[in-house]
Length: 539
Image 1 (cartoon, rainbow, N blue to C red):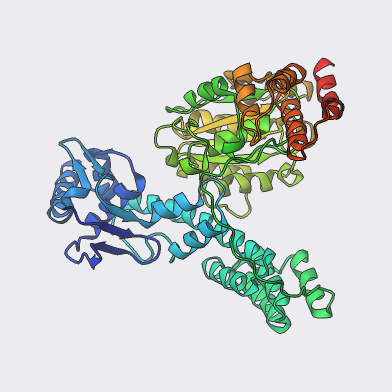
Image 2: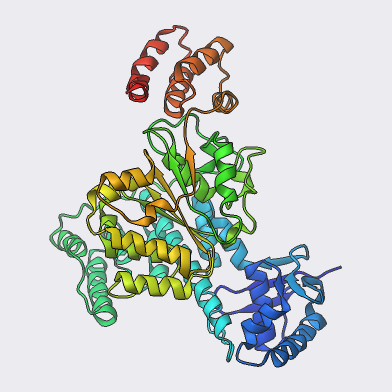
């Protein structure tokens, strides 16, 4: 019976078989090879692995060293490897535990508090902490990229968990969560503010004021800057007593996690961000994902009138391939991409005015590409960083591109031309753009006086119209209380299949059913609510 291999790579490395340390595998490069195959998850050629770990040697010498380390791995871990004359991969069917994979799985989609707690417990420290391989710059670059990506996920998890504890009055747990975060990123100012607030809410006013001093010292030593005005205002509020110290509410029991719970019915207003709530657009999804399966990645535009679901579709592209199946509807397709965990997605909402500044937008892009952000972050430095370091397929999702064109003068022809050149010529086909717009991007740019060829690289446009009848019926039938057939037909007719009117009509009908209201007045109310959206279609 195959033993269970345990790879704990977050923090100091622990390698075990059936709970016992695996001490015989002493070669650092053999261990590095095992870690790379397990975390990367793909099949690799012998040539690429030899370059990864012995790129400074002649190929014949590098191949010989690879054969030697493969022999060591076979002696101790043969069931966990798939080795042929040309290719090598980790055998994921063999019993194993990999903390990196568990960590990523827990944080995929929209994790609940219990998943955040489990993920932060798994994060004992940075990826491959204190692990070093001599004369392997390609492996080191890969390791640092993984480390930055995983640390970013951990930071978000700690912040989200601390906020959950704050909202539920568990200030002690929130304080502990933020303190752990600050050991990872001592100069993260928003974490210092959150800790100050939590300490004050817990009645530790002196500790909260001391935390401000710790924040100021860290920022001065590491970055040579003072705390922001937001942090200084919070300090003054705590010092003068104007910061409200809320009484600690009773600590509620954490809600149970229903992994197969049905999606909330009928979302009308905000964009749909969880894939289980999204219906339809299967043809558009198939075309869009086909553009992203192979390098070079190809660009696309999502075009449609207001409230046709453009932003929701962008979010769905971003989340569907990596959301655990247990959080989706039964039989919901998610196998759109090969090795989806290798893809990076960057969402840019141009209605956020902060992203209208060129340096702020460039830092946002680099952060979500898991790349270092130079200071100052100029366009040239951004281009150099991405062209030198981008190794994974990356899709930048531009929402409300028309706002960027019309309102933000710093995003000029030079900026857009540079993005086009970067994606086309400098990153080996690893970068693509998908943008949402009410009109063709070239037409929008021309109307605003921009002439950059960036707006002409979108070879495919998904034009969003009404949902098909099949798609609309699937949405209607998701109601927790079935609708009468006559109501279904009326909803289909009145909505015309457009997503927003469809959601509103379904919501109104469901409310009357939940209230046991036998009248038909809901139809008049619902028609009044969808009138603005239908009028918009007619103008």
